[in-house]
Length: 350
Image 1 (cartoon, rainbow, N blue to C red):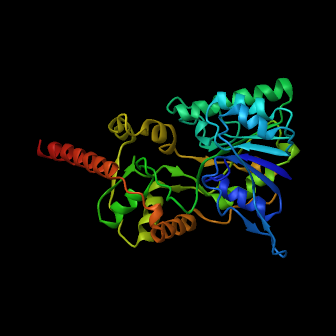
Image 2: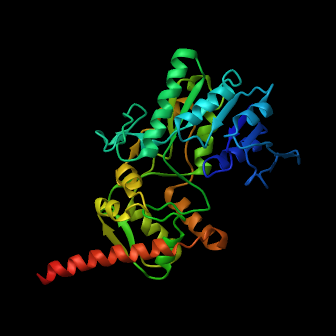
Image 3: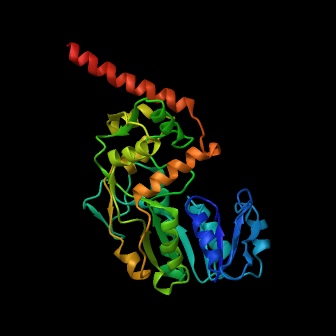
């Protein structure tokens, strides 16, 4: 297949890009080339290297991109970095009539919050009043589905849940620099914040397991006009997730449970926990992936959440470049935990 990715080197897309190259497909990447270096694989049994073909341009410079794409046709085009409707309008202008399939990366966070049924399927309503990111994804889906119905634009919508790779440990409450500061607090014996009582269920998927599901949709005629979520069917509580991380660090977890509402209020303008927690991670999620299995027979994640978490912790420990400290978030955690303790002390004294 001849495939083009807008992006192609992020958490979700990097594993897909590598897998496509391993399988011998012709892969084009539109991006600014910041992370393309080293994205090459040796084809099994041939000794030859397969590398992506780079189209180095800022996709937002539409006229420049259009000139570079002139005369090109693709089997599939996927945009991994579109967040708003106007970006998809640009994609339609660039790729309408240029591809047999256009894949939009939406988000499982767009599903109804709170859900009216414990089991989430692709027919679960898209209604998230707490997170603008999710509402923007829904608006993008609506725009593309309208194009499919009215003009036959060959779209497929993919809804990932919490997908991670070896560079960052997926945790619930963290700052702008990712989760390293939370791991550092664990290593120092400091308390770490878990939202709510930690018993809500969550699903995480390693990008190496996400990739086969996504690739199975590429060029798949049965996927046209469809929305499909891709994730592991496994769920763990947040308490279990943090325990696995602490065990992988070889330390005892010192958890402090704080209500999501309080965290959302305490985040102020610095941390959007109303969106990321109230509108996403504080809700129990159990996904039905039977639609994906029908479209991609044999899809079966092989890396358990525990295994993926442990491997990622060890990789982060081994690579200082992934250890981005966040003293501002560290101080915020201390203040929030101190405020909680002062409230408890006051009540006990009364």
